[in-house]
Length: 425
Image (cartoon, rainbow, N blue to C red; front, side, top):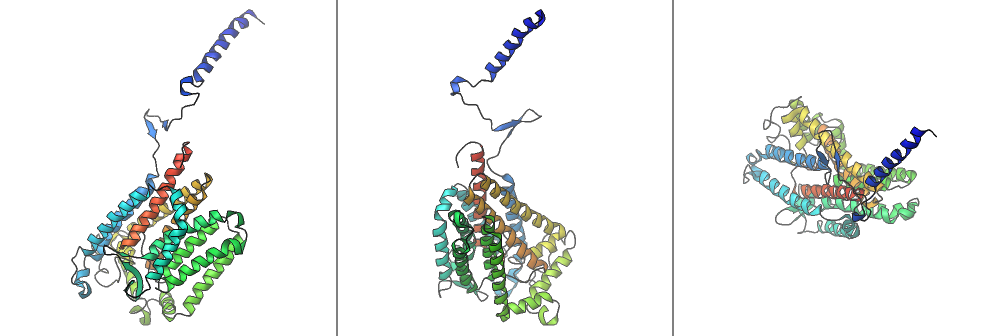
């Protein structure tokens, strides 16, 4: 070895030892390596990690506020109708504001409830929903509107058990799949009990009748079974049975058959002033809206031409007043919300939190599927069905349960982030 190399070697070794001493864990901290909750960016300021997905919260708030404005716009002229002559122009607005405040309070409480509690009460909540669905059919207990008995009067609001049933089925199906994970390949042991439970709920809903809610609940249950890993052939068999059941309901119901015929040819004189009346006026509203709409508050169809403009056909009023731009914004918002629910759910499953993941994805199916049906009905893509637009349409119990369901998704995301930071959910 040369003399220069011999001199350089101790210097190199000394520098390496000094670097190792600087990078070694501090004994005062017990040898633990500190973990930062921030990442340096080019500006030199730390970018703090948020405790939850703020996109879900802000899009939800945006849809709620937009719904508040449009419900007021769609209902302001209703006191001109003799049926609502005793109502003030702000009657539906004030009740909707109360529903939003109640929902906000419920969401604030829900987001603090750990997911393990929801998992423990899921079967019991399902039993409570079954009892409520029976109670709504009992004379002098359930309240009927337009020939349907779907509400239980609670003083401050008329509660609709079918809305709670959507949340209950998402929780129960997720809990069920976790319990049946080891037998999910066996049809009679894994699928049949869940199919019977959904069938019982379906029979009670059809007795109200509320076929729209049953379609959403069936989609939630089947979606969770599929995402939970049920065999593909079994899933196809269940789908075929469900579609066959809906076909039989339509075949043996004159009322539902007429709705289908009216949907296929809404401008026929036979249907335009009857079963297709709502659909034709909804299409007229969209046509008048064109690209940017007639302007907020300038809808003509809401002036007693379009029935249920503030509930089932709120999107038609949005289309007429805000045009294609407003409708596209609503569609994008629901797409974003549904996608976020699925993303949070997949993240939870990856962290071995199967129940939480399936619940989040079940809520995504609920929001996405119900919004799709409502939009399809308003646009004439699907037959007329009495389903509201989630988060936006007038309806106290619907708004309440929508917000609670999304608060549960936010809770799932909070627990995901806690686990990824090394904490406990």
